[in-house]
Image (cartoon, rainbow, N blue to C red):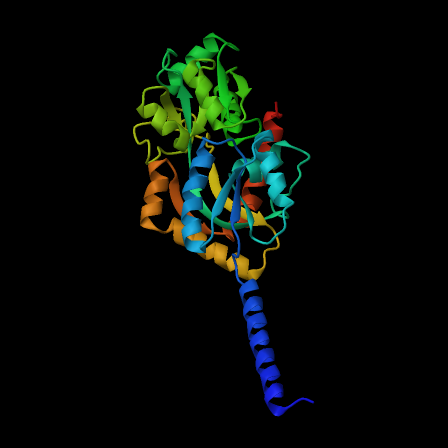
Length: 328
């Protein structure tokens, strides 16, 4: 026999259970509920890795969850980018990279495990990091003009390091060779850090690397900077001229940096990540930290990514065709 008191107790228990279940469902709808992984498609210690660790710290503080930096290097960013493209579009796996991944690889390579527009959507763009034409201190050239003269006098004798075949670094070197009419041998590495190590060690005479990686080595006197690859001098290296200023006005190769997720994010994840990203890049202390390592910070919302790719990719494909470039 069920009494009125026992019935009331059962109703109370049911109400409590429903409240607990409802709270659980509401919590499950939130984002993020677990750590977020930020994939870096380069080895530890390079320019993108440095920027990623700064951003991971800022994002973690704003998302309330740990942001784990996961280095997946190889194939000129293709391995890391492919892994993220095939991850669930739940916001828990992100990629930080430059136009190496999103426009240069698609311009150079016929087959990729991702499509820059169909596979990814951007959380936001944080700015750019102009490349620097670097030389070993022993190289008897202290300007672009002197380097061009030396390279023409010794065709095929000089070599330049890049941080991977098909990267912005590789592309910058090939553009330099084409526009200056020089024959300099390309030596690809698996990331910025090993390329810089061999430049410092004298195994290669030249390199194209980012401001982020170049500035501390220039300041330490381990390498010397000859020029930057932006059309105008960079604020972080104001004393260095640009290659364009050195007599090649059409020369420009500037990596822009973005964080993307697999396309198809749910609205709550997109909103949370987008806000956290914007708050990071617009925070004066974090901006200063990025600028200190050589990033020219200029926040753009994620929607700017599609426009950039749609504009830049056809131009680069046309240049690759005209120059007859191939991936080593």
